[in-house]
Amino acid sequence: MSTRTEKIREILREVAAEYILREASPQSLITVTRTSVTEDGKRGTIFISVLPDSAETAALDFTNRHRRDLAHFFKTRVKGVYPPHMEFVIDKGEKMRQRLDELS
Image (cartoon, rainbow, N blue to C red; front, side, top):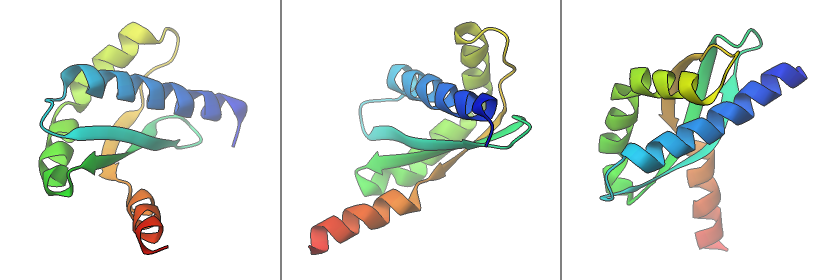
């Protein structure tokens, strides 16, 4: 992965976390756990975890519904980088890690 792609990935994580902190309701805790970006920087995936687990569907609907607003927020925060097409998904790896912690 190139350094440019890594920088875009990190910037996307920071901007998405800031946007969710500002816009999400306090009914659930939505955390950006990691991001991935294609090599050309045109598509990005934002992995989130949600507490409580029962609010995952609502949180995923909220975040995917606000992708356009997030892209506009990205443009105001980051100059010289066009925002990638973003998709939010639940971070299954984080859920599995938490489950392993419970078992041990």
